Length: 194
Picture: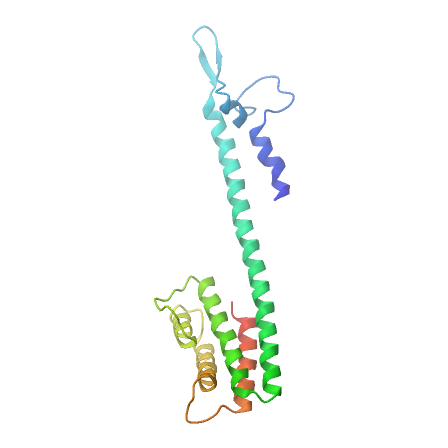
């Protein structure tokens, strides 16, 4: 936050020129030097090191704001990179489907959905005790935490069922239409659910 640097320095450095030292002109630099201003032979205190406390608190607030902004910027960058990665994985899934690799296409799309739901859970501080949570686990946790409404929860449940058809040898093969539904649903949720 370069725009706050001058403010930070202002609270630290002595004003130039400074004709007298009072509570308004006392700075953190004066505190670090142990400067106390007294008057008369009784050494009546005019300004002491306590005058630096408000300036120090302002500097502390600036540093906290910088830290929060830095974390927010890193979060935004991570979200953008992850969104690009998910987009490219969904493009790969679509290509696999076009080439007739139905199960593989659904498996890739399912992985994207699971990763995205994991990120959404992290964003909302929703945690699970399971070491390897599944789409269903994340879906249920997000519903219980009021991150998902019932229609979205049901839709994700359906997408998870299609993914399971692709990943596990069930009684039947997934259809091309089901996998296309999975890809479209995953694409929707990666763009609308944060």
